[in-house]
Length: 232
Image 1: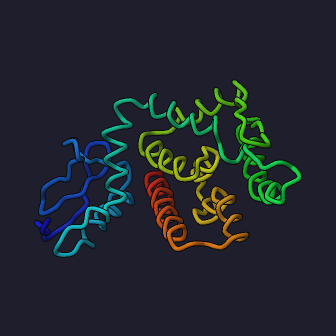
Image 2 (image 1 turned 135 degrees about the horizontal axis):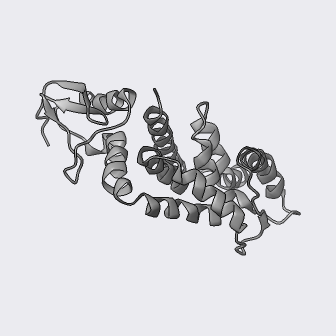
């Protein structure tokens, strides 16, 4: 698609801020007004439009796509978004370890336990750790507390949390991104512990490296969206 606008601006709107292209307000892919909660997020969305060339590249609208998902998908059924996120708690990567006599087990303890313990202490949770691949349910009290925590979040947090949990295969890692000082590279490294370990033992292949880079960029973008949506 050819670029069809010259000027990009951000203006206040009922409930937040919105991007204007040549004085025409942006709408979501389903036609709803694309109003976001903070000016910082709106300016980042505007930058995606400003940085387009003569030909519009849809792949460069990562933040816009997350905003549309928050408005079109999460807002109409927030409870469903919460329940979907809870599935990542039941199969959280950080809770499933190698057997204790395997070298990987020590790496998993070093990388994963500090984050799990911090989450347990901060929110009054208890996570079951499992050696092997046999599923073990998390305590009902833990799931209930996580449901409370997630229900307190607005759609502009739940949308990137879904992306982060999917990329990390971990709700714990996703929730850690809510902290103001969250480091996306460090959190991604934690979630990618097993893949990185295998690469250290056997070496990276080109496709695996490319896949890791793409996933890391998506993780960074989702963390940035989350932080911008909470910025005063």
